[in-house]
Image (cartoon, rainbow, N blue to C red; front, side, top):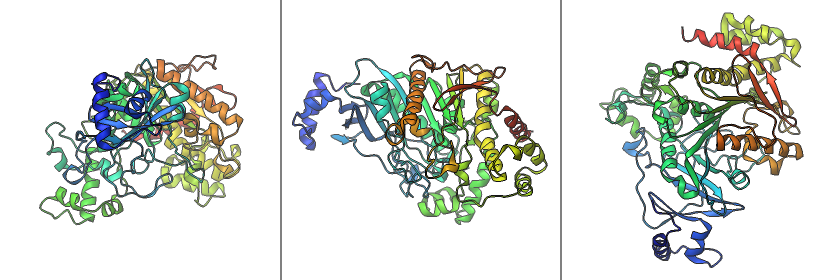
Length: 527
C-alpha cells in the first residue's frame, strides 16, 4: 500500500485534487495537505480529512458495501473502490433505528461507515489503536451520538485521546435490531462462505476490524496493537468478539465497560422462531419466498414489527454459548479490562413509578424471579437503602450489568486471560438529576475526555486517571505505570478491583454476596 508521503502519491494526489477541485484552506495546496497528513491513500481510494485541534480526523469512511436491496441481512460485502478524493469530514447517518436516548430515529440502511482520529502531526512510529463499539442495546446508537439528558456534545469524540494520549481512535457504525440480527434459514443458504444467519451487526464490527488491520497504518496506527473497547451493548459485543473464533488475531486487548456475555444467550432455534413471528406479522409467512418478501418490506414496517432483535448463538460467529467457550478456554486470551458502575440501574428507572413499601418490593421481585425473590431480598435488605425503590433499582442494575460483567471477568481469568476489574463510582449530573448517581454510561465522558471541558476540577482529575489507565493498557496490555495507584490483576481467589472516583482505591469482593445469588439464578437457565 502506498503512503501519501511517497513521491508517486504526491504526483497522483496533485492530479486528483486538480480534477476534484479540492484545495487546502491555507493555500498550501496538495503538498501541504500531505505534509499535514490530512490527505491519505487507503486500499479503496483517497481520503481528505481535516485537522481538529491537535488531532487529524477522518469521518464517514465506508468499510463495507451498503447493505441494501439483496444485501439486506447478508454478511458485510467489500466496499467498491472510488475514484478521486472522498471528503471524509462528516459523520455518517445512524443505522436504521427508532429514536433512542442518544440517537434520533433513522431509516438509513446505507450506514456502514467508520471514523478515525489520529495525532497531528502524524507520528514517526506506529501508535496503539483503540477501536470503539457504541452502546444502545444493539437496537439504537451510532458513532454520532450526542451526550444525553440535555448535556449535548459528541459522546464518542476521539480528539482528546488522540491528541493528549498518543493513540489512534476508531469508531464504527454497525447494523442494529432487525437489520443487524435477523436469523432466517434462507440466509444460511445464500452464502457458501458463511452458511449461517444472524449476527450481521457483529460481522459488521469484524469487517471494520479487518479494515483497521488493512488500513490503519496509513493514519499512524499499529495494526498489531489494537484494543477493542465498548460500553453497554458495545461491552457485550466486545465480549462476543473475544469469544468468537472468527475474530481471533484482529485485536490484542479488550475493554468491556458495563457488559459481559456469559449469561444465557438466545439460541439459533429461538431466533428462528422470532423471525417466523416477524414474517407472520408482516404477511410474509405465506409468500412463495418469505425472505424476498421481508426484503421488500419498508424500514418503518420492519422496525415496528421487530420487538427487538439481538445477538444469537448462530453456530458460526458464536458457535456455542459464550459461557461454554470461556469455560473451555476457546476464546481470545487477550488482556481484558471489565467493569461497571455503582448505580447501573438508575438510568433505566427514569420516568417509572416508584414503589413505596416492602410488600411492593417483594411483589416486584416475585413477578420476575418467582420463588427466588426471598433469596434476592435477603442480599438487598431495605435497611441498607433510603427507600424500597432504591433497593429494587440496585437489584435491577446488579443483575443486568454489574454481576453479568463480573461473571465474564471471573471466567476469562480462570480461562487464562490477564483480567483487570474496575468499579466507577463518580456521581454525575448531581445538580440536574441527583438520583442518577454513578449511572449506566456515566464513565464514557471520563474515558473520552469530554468531562475535562464540561465538568469540574475533580471530574478532570478522574478523567486524567482513567485515560491514563486505558491508554497504558492499550499500549502494553497492563494499565499500571506513571506513578498511578497499582491496579491489581484479577483472580477469583483474591477478587480485587480498582474503584474510580476522586481518590482511587482498591476494593475487595465488591458486591460478591449479591452477585453470587444472581450467578446461581443464571446458572439455572443452563440446566
